[in-house]
Image 1 (tube, rainbow, N blue to C red):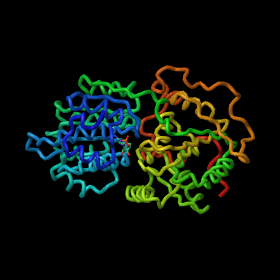
Image 2 (cartoon, protein in one colour):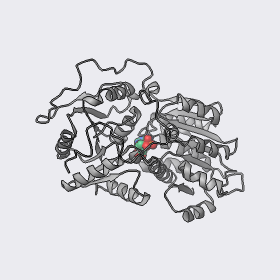
Image 3 (cartoon, rainbow, N blue to C red):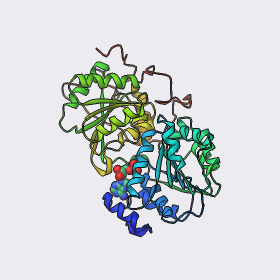
Image 4 (tube, rainbow, N blue to C red):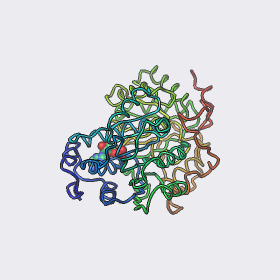
Length: 435
Ligand code: AMP
Protein backbone atom coordinates (compact mmCIF):
# COMPACT_ATOMS: atom_id res chain seq x y z
CA UNK A 1 0.00 0.00 0.00
CA UNK A 2 1.29 3.46 -0.86
CA UNK A 3 -0.01 6.89 0.13
CA UNK A 4 -0.99 7.40 -3.54
CA UNK A 5 -3.56 4.59 -3.14
CA UNK A 6 -5.33 6.49 -0.37
CA UNK A 7 -6.87 9.11 -2.68
CA UNK A 8 -5.30 12.02 -0.89
CA UNK A 9 -4.92 15.45 -2.48
CA UNK A 10 -1.55 16.09 -4.23
CA UNK A 11 -0.71 18.86 -1.77
CA UNK A 12 -1.08 16.39 1.12
CA UNK A 13 0.99 13.78 -0.73
CA UNK A 14 3.69 16.38 -1.27
CA UNK A 15 3.84 17.21 2.44
CA UNK A 16 3.98 13.50 3.30
CA UNK A 17 6.87 13.02 0.88
CA UNK A 18 8.64 16.01 2.43
CA UNK A 19 8.17 14.45 5.86
CA UNK A 20 10.08 11.47 4.45
CA UNK A 21 7.28 8.92 4.81
CA UNK A 22 7.37 6.27 2.11
CA UNK A 23 4.34 4.20 3.04
CA UNK A 24 1.39 4.43 5.41
CA UNK A 25 1.80 2.84 8.83
CA UNK A 26 -0.72 0.00 9.56
CA UNK A 27 -3.07 2.28 11.51
CA UNK A 28 -2.95 4.83 8.68
CA UNK A 29 -3.62 2.18 6.02
CA UNK A 30 -6.55 0.82 8.03
CA UNK A 31 -8.08 4.09 9.24
CA UNK A 32 -7.72 6.58 6.39
CA UNK A 33 -10.00 4.78 3.86
CA UNK A 34 -12.71 4.30 6.54
CA UNK A 35 -12.57 7.96 7.53
CA UNK A 36 -12.64 9.17 3.92
CA UNK A 37 -15.66 6.91 3.34
CA UNK A 38 -17.38 9.01 6.02
CA UNK A 39 -17.55 6.42 8.79
CA UNK A 40 -17.22 7.14 12.48
CA UNK A 41 -14.25 5.26 13.83
CA UNK A 42 -12.98 3.82 17.07
CA UNK A 43 -9.40 2.64 16.91
CA UNK A 44 -6.96 1.24 19.40
CA UNK A 45 -3.50 2.47 18.55
CA UNK A 46 -0.58 3.43 20.72
CA UNK A 47 1.34 6.61 20.38
CA UNK A 48 4.31 5.99 18.07
CA UNK A 49 2.24 4.09 15.51
CA UNK A 50 1.51 7.11 13.34
CA UNK A 51 -2.01 7.57 14.69
CA UNK A 52 -1.85 11.36 14.45
CA UNK A 53 -1.52 11.28 10.67
CA UNK A 54 -4.26 8.63 10.59
CA UNK A 55 -6.76 11.34 11.53
CA UNK A 56 -5.04 14.53 10.37
CA UNK A 57 -4.53 13.39 6.76
CA UNK A 58 -8.22 12.62 6.07
CA UNK A 59 -9.14 15.81 7.94
CA UNK A 60 -6.90 17.77 5.58
CA UNK A 61 -8.48 15.99 2.64
CA UNK A 62 -11.85 17.45 3.77
CA UNK A 63 -10.25 20.88 4.01
CA UNK A 64 -9.24 20.76 0.35
CA UNK A 65 -12.96 21.43 -0.35
CA UNK A 66 -14.34 24.80 0.77
CA UNK A 67 -16.90 24.78 3.55
CA UNK A 68 -20.53 25.31 2.57
CA UNK A 69 -21.10 27.29 5.74
CA UNK A 70 -20.56 31.01 6.28
CA UNK A 71 -19.38 30.39 9.83
CA UNK A 72 -15.70 31.01 10.67
CA UNK A 73 -15.55 28.40 13.42
CA UNK A 74 -13.40 25.26 13.29
CA UNK A 75 -14.18 22.53 10.77
CA UNK A 76 -12.05 19.97 12.59
CA UNK A 77 -11.75 19.70 16.37
CA UNK A 78 -9.15 17.48 18.06
CA UNK A 79 -9.37 16.99 21.83
CA UNK A 80 -6.32 15.68 23.64
CA UNK A 81 -5.71 14.92 27.33
CA UNK A 82 -2.50 16.92 27.75
CA UNK A 83 -0.96 20.14 26.57
CA UNK A 84 2.08 18.33 25.23
CA UNK A 85 0.01 16.02 23.08
CA UNK A 86 -2.10 18.95 21.85
CA UNK A 87 1.07 20.81 20.86
CA UNK A 88 2.35 17.78 18.99
CA UNK A 89 -0.91 17.22 17.17
CA UNK A 90 -0.91 20.89 16.25
CA UNK A 91 2.66 20.65 14.97
CA UNK A 92 1.77 17.53 12.97
CA UNK A 93 -1.27 19.28 11.46
CA UNK A 94 0.94 22.17 10.42
CA UNK A 95 3.54 19.83 8.95
CA UNK A 96 1.04 17.83 6.91
CA UNK A 97 -0.75 20.99 5.73
CA UNK A 98 2.44 22.81 4.76
CA UNK A 99 1.36 22.86 1.10
CA UNK A 100 -2.18 24.05 1.84
CA UNK A 101 -3.88 27.12 3.21
CA UNK A 102 -5.06 25.78 6.52
CA UNK A 103 -5.43 27.73 9.74
CA UNK A 104 -4.73 25.63 12.82
CA UNK A 105 -5.17 26.92 16.34
CA UNK A 106 -4.13 25.29 19.59
CA UNK A 107 -6.04 26.15 22.77
CA UNK A 108 -4.39 25.01 25.98
CA UNK A 109 -4.80 25.53 29.68
CA UNK A 110 -2.09 27.65 31.26
CA UNK A 111 -1.94 30.10 28.36
CA UNK A 112 -3.27 33.68 28.49
CA UNK A 113 -6.92 34.13 27.53
CA UNK A 114 -6.63 37.37 25.51
CA UNK A 115 -4.40 35.74 22.88
CA UNK A 116 -6.70 32.72 22.69
CA UNK A 117 -9.73 35.01 22.34
CA UNK A 118 -8.02 36.72 19.44
CA UNK A 119 -7.15 33.42 17.76
CA UNK A 120 -10.72 32.19 18.17
CA UNK A 121 -12.19 35.37 16.72
CA UNK A 122 -10.47 34.68 13.41
CA UNK A 123 -11.40 31.96 10.89
CA UNK A 124 -10.18 28.54 12.07
CA UNK A 125 -9.94 25.28 10.16
CA UNK A 126 -8.39 22.93 12.72
CA UNK A 127 -8.72 23.50 16.43
CA UNK A 128 -6.62 21.34 18.76
CA UNK A 129 -7.50 21.72 22.42
CA UNK A 130 -7.44 20.28 25.90
CA UNK A 131 -11.01 19.91 27.19
CA UNK A 132 -10.87 22.11 30.30
CA UNK A 133 -9.81 25.31 28.59
CA UNK A 134 -12.04 24.68 25.61
CA UNK A 135 -15.04 24.43 27.93
CA UNK A 136 -14.16 27.85 29.37
CA UNK A 137 -14.24 29.40 25.92
CA UNK A 138 -17.38 27.50 24.97
CA UNK A 139 -19.21 28.70 28.06
CA UNK A 140 -18.20 32.28 27.27
CA UNK A 141 -19.69 31.90 23.82
CA UNK A 142 -16.37 32.35 22.04
CA UNK A 143 -16.55 29.29 19.83
CA UNK A 144 -18.88 28.67 16.94
CA UNK A 145 -19.10 24.98 16.16
CA UNK A 146 -21.84 25.33 13.56
CA UNK A 147 -19.63 24.26 10.66
CA UNK A 148 -17.74 21.53 12.50
CA UNK A 149 -17.32 18.45 10.31
CA UNK A 150 -15.09 16.21 12.37
CA UNK A 151 -14.49 15.64 16.08
CA UNK A 152 -11.42 13.61 17.07
CA UNK A 153 -10.94 12.29 20.60
CA UNK A 154 -7.25 11.49 20.85
CA UNK A 155 -6.12 9.23 23.69
CA UNK A 156 -9.71 9.10 24.85
CA UNK A 157 -8.93 6.60 27.61
CA UNK A 158 -6.54 9.09 29.15
CA UNK A 159 -9.07 11.88 28.96
CA UNK A 160 -11.46 9.69 30.92
CA UNK A 161 -8.77 8.76 33.45
CA UNK A 162 -8.06 12.43 33.99
CA UNK A 163 -11.67 13.18 34.77
CA UNK A 164 -12.51 14.95 31.50
CA UNK A 165 -15.51 12.78 30.61
CA UNK A 166 -18.13 15.42 31.40
CA UNK A 167 -16.20 18.11 29.56
CA UNK A 168 -15.76 15.88 26.53
CA UNK A 169 -19.47 15.08 26.43
CA UNK A 170 -20.41 18.73 26.91
CA UNK A 171 -18.15 19.76 24.04
CA UNK A 172 -19.50 16.99 21.81
CA UNK A 173 -23.05 18.09 22.63
CA UNK A 174 -22.19 21.61 21.41
CA UNK A 175 -21.16 20.32 17.97
CA UNK A 176 -23.49 19.46 15.10
CA UNK A 177 -25.07 16.00 15.22
CA UNK A 178 -24.02 15.58 11.58
CA UNK A 179 -20.33 15.57 12.53
CA UNK A 180 -18.03 12.61 11.95
CA UNK A 181 -16.45 11.35 15.16
CA UNK A 182 -13.17 9.49 15.54
CA UNK A 183 -12.02 8.03 18.82
CA UNK A 184 -8.46 6.83 19.43
CA UNK A 185 -7.67 5.03 22.63
CA UNK A 186 -5.27 2.44 24.07
CA UNK A 187 -8.29 0.34 24.99
CA UNK A 188 -11.73 0.17 23.43
CA UNK A 189 -13.41 -1.63 26.29
CA UNK A 190 -15.13 -0.60 29.52
CA UNK A 191 -15.90 3.08 30.02
CA UNK A 192 -14.53 3.87 26.58
CA UNK A 193 -17.08 1.57 24.98
CA UNK A 194 -19.81 3.47 26.85
CA UNK A 195 -18.49 6.84 25.72
CA UNK A 196 -18.20 5.59 22.13
CA UNK A 197 -21.79 4.38 22.23
CA UNK A 198 -22.99 7.83 23.25
CA UNK A 199 -20.85 9.88 20.87
CA UNK A 200 -20.23 7.73 17.79
CA UNK A 201 -22.67 6.55 15.13
CA UNK A 202 -22.28 2.98 13.95
CA UNK A 203 -18.48 3.24 14.14
CA UNK A 204 -15.99 1.09 12.29
CA UNK A 205 -13.70 -0.54 14.77
CA UNK A 206 -9.98 -0.93 14.21
CA UNK A 207 -8.04 -2.93 16.71
CA UNK A 208 -4.36 -2.88 15.94
CA UNK A 209 -2.29 -5.93 16.84
CA UNK A 210 -2.20 -6.84 20.51
CA UNK A 211 0.08 -4.87 22.79
CA UNK A 212 2.80 -7.48 22.77
CA UNK A 213 3.32 -7.25 19.02
CA UNK A 214 4.37 -3.64 19.37
CA UNK A 215 7.62 -2.24 20.58
CA UNK A 216 9.56 -4.99 18.83
CA UNK A 217 12.33 -2.46 18.27
CA UNK A 218 12.53 -1.65 21.97
CA UNK A 219 14.69 -3.87 24.14
CA UNK A 220 13.15 -4.14 27.59
CA UNK A 221 15.41 -4.80 30.57
CA UNK A 222 14.71 -5.35 34.22
CA UNK A 223 17.25 -4.42 36.88
CA UNK A 224 16.51 -5.78 40.33
CA UNK A 225 17.44 -3.25 42.99
CA UNK A 226 17.59 -3.43 46.77
CA UNK A 227 16.72 0.12 47.73
CA UNK A 228 16.91 3.75 46.70
CA UNK A 229 20.65 4.02 47.20
CA UNK A 230 21.10 1.06 44.88
CA UNK A 231 18.85 2.71 42.28
CA UNK A 232 20.87 5.91 42.44
CA UNK A 233 24.18 4.08 42.05
CA UNK A 234 22.90 2.00 39.16
CA UNK A 235 21.39 5.02 37.43
CA UNK A 236 24.66 6.91 37.68
CA UNK A 237 26.46 3.95 36.22
CA UNK A 238 24.00 3.48 33.33
CA UNK A 239 24.16 7.15 32.42
CA UNK A 240 27.93 7.02 31.97
CA UNK A 241 27.37 4.73 28.98
CA UNK A 242 28.06 6.65 25.75
CA UNK A 243 25.31 4.62 24.08
CA UNK A 244 22.84 6.69 26.09
CA UNK A 245 22.38 9.50 23.60
CA UNK A 246 19.34 10.94 25.34
CA UNK A 247 17.23 9.39 28.08
CA UNK A 248 13.96 9.99 29.85
CA UNK A 249 14.04 8.89 33.47
CA UNK A 250 10.59 8.41 34.97
CA UNK A 251 9.80 9.01 38.63
CA UNK A 252 6.50 8.56 40.45
CA UNK A 253 6.15 12.09 41.69
CA UNK A 254 6.87 15.63 40.59
CA UNK A 255 8.93 16.24 43.68
CA UNK A 256 11.11 13.23 43.00
CA UNK A 257 11.53 14.34 39.39
CA UNK A 258 12.83 17.72 40.58
CA UNK A 259 15.13 16.19 43.16
CA UNK A 260 16.57 13.55 40.89
CA UNK A 261 17.12 16.08 38.09
CA UNK A 262 18.96 18.32 40.54
CA UNK A 263 21.11 15.42 41.72
CA UNK A 264 21.99 14.43 38.17
CA UNK A 265 22.74 18.02 37.25
CA UNK A 266 25.01 18.28 40.28
CA UNK A 267 26.79 15.15 39.07
CA UNK A 268 27.57 16.94 35.81
CA UNK A 269 24.81 15.61 33.58
CA UNK A 270 22.83 17.85 31.24
CA UNK A 271 19.67 17.01 33.16
CA UNK A 272 16.34 18.75 33.69
CA UNK A 273 12.93 17.93 35.11
CA UNK A 274 9.55 17.99 33.35
CA UNK A 275 6.31 17.73 35.27
CA UNK A 276 2.85 19.14 35.61
CA UNK A 277 3.71 21.75 38.25
CA UNK A 278 5.88 23.65 35.79
CA UNK A 279 4.18 26.43 33.88
CA UNK A 280 3.63 25.97 30.19
CA UNK A 281 6.48 28.28 29.18
CA UNK A 282 8.96 26.31 31.29
CA UNK A 283 7.65 23.01 29.93
CA UNK A 284 7.97 24.22 26.36
CA UNK A 285 11.48 25.53 26.94
CA UNK A 286 12.53 22.21 28.45
CA UNK A 287 11.07 20.28 25.52
CA UNK A 288 12.82 22.56 23.03
CA UNK A 289 16.12 22.01 24.81
CA UNK A 290 15.50 18.27 24.76
CA UNK A 291 14.76 18.40 21.04
CA UNK A 292 17.85 20.41 20.21
CA UNK A 293 20.07 18.18 22.34
CA UNK A 294 20.86 20.69 25.10
CA UNK A 295 19.26 18.28 27.58
CA UNK A 296 20.55 14.72 27.63
CA UNK A 297 18.63 13.40 30.63
CA UNK A 298 15.02 14.40 31.15
CA UNK A 299 13.56 13.38 34.50
CA UNK A 300 9.82 13.29 34.09
CA UNK A 301 6.47 12.22 35.44
CA UNK A 302 3.96 10.32 33.32
CA UNK A 303 1.52 12.94 32.19
CA UNK A 304 4.14 15.55 31.38
CA UNK A 305 6.10 13.11 29.24
CA UNK A 306 3.15 11.68 27.40
CA UNK A 307 3.36 12.21 23.68
CA UNK A 308 6.98 13.38 23.65
CA UNK A 309 8.32 12.54 20.22
CA UNK A 310 12.06 13.13 20.12
CA UNK A 311 14.07 10.93 17.79
CA UNK A 312 17.24 11.12 19.91
CA UNK A 313 15.76 9.33 22.92
CA UNK A 314 17.83 6.14 23.00
CA UNK A 315 16.82 5.06 26.52
CA UNK A 316 13.83 5.18 28.81
CA UNK A 317 14.60 4.43 32.43
CA UNK A 318 11.82 3.59 34.85
CA UNK A 319 13.48 4.77 38.04
CA UNK A 320 10.10 4.04 39.61
CA UNK A 321 7.70 1.64 37.93
CA UNK A 322 4.56 3.32 36.66
CA UNK A 323 1.50 2.94 38.82
CA UNK A 324 -0.61 1.77 35.92
CA UNK A 325 0.45 -0.95 33.52
CA UNK A 326 -0.72 1.03 30.54
CA UNK A 327 1.64 3.88 31.43
CA UNK A 328 4.52 1.45 31.04
CA UNK A 329 3.64 1.06 27.37
CA UNK A 330 3.41 4.82 26.94
CA UNK A 331 6.68 5.40 28.72
CA UNK A 332 8.74 2.93 26.75
CA UNK A 333 7.19 4.25 23.54
CA UNK A 334 9.21 7.48 24.08
CA UNK A 335 12.21 5.59 22.72
CA UNK A 336 12.48 3.59 19.50
CA UNK A 337 10.63 6.35 17.65
CA UNK A 338 9.93 5.95 13.95
CA UNK A 339 11.44 2.47 13.80
CA UNK A 340 14.81 3.15 15.50
CA UNK A 341 16.19 0.83 18.18
CA UNK A 342 15.48 1.79 21.78
CA UNK A 343 16.26 0.46 25.24
CA UNK A 344 13.78 0.57 28.11
CA UNK A 345 15.21 -0.13 31.55
CA UNK A 346 13.05 -0.73 34.62
CA UNK A 347 14.24 -0.73 38.21
CA UNK A 348 12.24 -2.92 40.56
CA UNK A 349 12.67 -4.16 44.08
CA UNK A 350 11.06 -7.02 45.98
CA UNK A 351 8.15 -4.74 46.85
CA UNK A 352 7.33 -4.32 43.17
CA UNK A 353 6.72 -7.99 42.35
CA UNK A 354 2.95 -7.75 41.96
CA UNK A 355 3.24 -4.48 40.18
CA UNK A 356 5.71 -5.91 37.71
CA UNK A 357 3.46 -8.90 37.08
CA UNK A 358 0.61 -6.60 36.17
CA UNK A 359 2.81 -4.81 33.68
CA UNK A 360 3.95 -8.09 32.19
CA UNK A 361 0.38 -9.34 31.90
CA UNK A 362 -0.56 -6.11 30.18
CA UNK A 363 2.25 -6.19 27.64
CA UNK A 364 2.12 -9.95 27.24
CA UNK A 365 5.74 -10.71 27.92
CA UNK A 366 8.19 -10.96 30.77
CA UNK A 367 10.80 -8.22 31.00
CA UNK A 368 14.24 -9.78 30.72
CA UNK A 369 16.36 -9.42 33.87
CA UNK A 370 19.76 -7.81 33.39
CA UNK A 371 22.60 -7.68 35.85
CA UNK A 372 25.44 -5.18 35.68
CA UNK A 373 28.54 -6.73 37.26
CA UNK A 374 29.27 -4.93 40.50
CA UNK A 375 25.66 -3.75 40.82
CA UNK A 376 23.96 -7.04 41.71
CA UNK A 377 21.00 -6.95 44.08
CA UNK A 378 21.62 -8.62 47.42
CA UNK A 379 18.07 -9.96 47.51
CA UNK A 380 16.61 -11.79 44.52
CA UNK A 381 13.31 -10.47 43.37
CA UNK A 382 11.46 -13.52 42.18
CA UNK A 383 11.29 -17.04 43.47
CA UNK A 384 11.84 -18.42 39.99
CA UNK A 385 8.14 -18.77 39.34
CA UNK A 386 7.30 -18.47 35.67
CA UNK A 387 6.10 -15.12 34.51
CA UNK A 388 2.37 -14.76 34.26
CA UNK A 389 2.78 -13.24 30.83
CA UNK A 390 0.48 -14.60 28.20
CA UNK A 391 -1.81 -16.44 30.58
CA UNK A 392 -4.79 -14.23 29.97
CA UNK A 393 -6.39 -13.67 26.64
CA UNK A 394 -6.97 -10.14 25.37
CA UNK A 395 -4.01 -8.68 27.15
CA UNK A 396 -4.34 -5.59 29.06
CA UNK A 397 -7.79 -4.33 28.67
CA UNK A 398 -9.22 -6.21 31.62
CA UNK A 399 -6.16 -5.51 33.58
CA UNK A 400 -5.89 -1.77 33.31
CA UNK A 401 -7.21 -1.23 36.75
CA UNK A 402 -6.11 -4.53 38.18
CA UNK A 403 -5.52 -3.94 41.85
CA UNK A 404 -6.24 -0.24 41.58
CA UNK A 405 -9.99 -0.19 41.40
CA UNK A 406 -10.21 2.62 43.85
CA UNK A 407 -8.44 5.08 41.57
CA UNK A 408 -10.43 8.29 41.61
CA UNK A 409 -10.77 10.46 38.59
CA UNK A 410 -8.56 13.46 38.39
CA UNK A 411 -5.67 12.23 40.49
CA UNK A 412 -3.09 12.40 37.75
CA UNK A 413 0.01 14.48 37.65
CA UNK A 414 -0.88 18.06 37.02
CA UNK A 415 -4.43 17.54 38.15
CA UNK A 416 -3.95 16.58 41.72
CA UNK A 417 -3.09 18.16 44.96
CA UNK A 418 -1.36 15.13 46.32
CA UNK A 419 2.06 16.75 45.93
CA UNK A 420 4.89 14.37 46.68
CA UNK A 421 2.90 12.01 48.86
CA UNK A 422 2.84 9.07 46.54
CA UNK A 423 5.57 6.62 47.31
CA UNK A 424 5.63 4.38 44.32
CA UNK A 425 8.28 1.95 45.46
CA UNK A 426 8.25 2.19 49.18
CA UNK A 427 11.97 2.78 49.21
CA UNK A 428 11.83 5.57 51.68
CA UNK A 429 12.32 8.50 49.37
CA UNK A 430 12.94 11.32 49.72
CA UNK A 431 14.32 11.18 53.27
CA UNK A 432 16.93 8.62 52.30
CA UNK A 433 18.00 10.27 49.12
CA UNK A 434 21.34 11.01 50.70
CA UNK A 435 21.24 14.69 49.91
P1 AMP B 1 2.39 9.24 16.32
O1 AMP B 1 2.02 7.82 16.67
O2 AMP B 1 1.32 9.92 15.57
O3 AMP B 1 2.86 9.99 17.54
O4 AMP B 1 3.65 9.19 15.30
C1 AMP B 1 4.88 8.65 15.67
C2 AMP B 1 6.01 9.08 14.75
O5 AMP B 1 5.94 8.40 13.50
C3 AMP B 1 6.07 10.56 14.42
O6 AMP B 1 7.42 10.96 14.57
C4 AMP B 1 5.66 10.67 12.99
O7 AMP B 1 6.33 11.75 12.36
C5 AMP B 1 6.13 9.34 12.43
N1 AMP B 1 5.30 8.84 11.31
C6 AMP B 1 3.96 8.93 11.18
N2 AMP B 1 3.56 8.32 10.05
C7 AMP B 1 4.66 7.81 9.46
C8 AMP B 1 4.89 7.06 8.25
N3 AMP B 1 3.90 6.69 7.45
N4 AMP B 1 6.17 6.72 7.96
C9 AMP B 1 7.18 7.06 8.80
N5 AMP B 1 7.03 7.77 9.94
C10 AMP B 1 5.78 8.15 10.27
